[in-house]
Image (cartoon, rainbow, N blue to C red; front, side):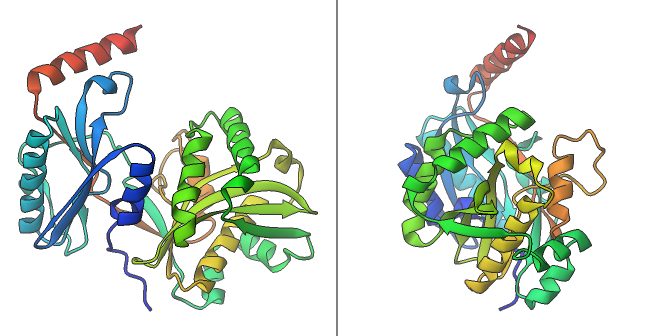
Length: 322
C-alpha cells in the first residue's frame, strides 16, 4: 500500500468528532459532492473569545476541486446563520489537484494560522531499512544499539497509566515555556480513542527508568499515525543517549508493524526558518527523523456580525496594551 499524502485530516474524522463531543464541544458534520466538513460550534479562542461565537473547521472543509470548495463554503455560511455565529474560521484542505484558492474564497480573509500549515510526513510504505536511511546518521546508529544502551519502550492504552505522562508534560512546559493542555484533555483522548485502537501513550525507558513519553493518534482510514504530544522528565537530560529520538523511531516502527503507511509529525517550521523561530529546535529534531514537507492552505476568516467583531478587535487591542 503506497502512501497517499492527500487525504482527509485526522481533525475531520468521525472519531475525532467523538472526542470533541466528549470534551463538551458541539459538532456539526455535513457533506456534498466532492466536499465534507466537521465544524466546531462555540467560543472563539483567545482572551476575548468567549464573547465571540464561531463556526470553526479545523483542517476543513475537505474538498477535491474549486466547485466543491465553493459549495462547501456556502453550506458553512448557511450553518453560521442558523447557529447565529459571529464569525466563520476555515482551514481548507485540498485532496484534489493543486490550484490557487484565493479566487474561490470570496469574503474570507487569510489570517494567522490556527493550526500548523506546514507539517512533515514520513513514508512508512517503504521497507524499514529505507525508512531508517531517511534519518540522521546519529539516529540510525542509536536505533541499531538500543538494546546495548539499555533503552526500552512500552505503549499503554490504559488511562490510569498516564500520571507519568502528565508530569512529563508539566516539567517540559516549565523547562521550555511551551503551553500544553491540562491532564484531562490527554486522558480523554486515551479514554475515547484507545478503545477504538486509535490512540495510546508510548513511554521510553533508560536502564528501567521511565523518562520520556509521547501521545499518538492513529487514523486507520488514512493509514497514518500522528505524533501529537511529547514530554520528558528533566532527568532525561542527564543521560547521553537521545532517548526522545529513539522513542519516535520506535513509534514509526510500531506504526509500520501495525500496517500504517505514513507518520505525521504534526507541524514544523520551514526548512530555512531562522534560529529564533519558536519551532526551530523542535523542527530540527523532527527533521532528523526523516520525512517530507507537506503544506496546507492556512486559516481563513469570514466575519458575519461585523459590528460586534469590530468591537471585539478593539477590545483585543486594549487587552494587549494592558
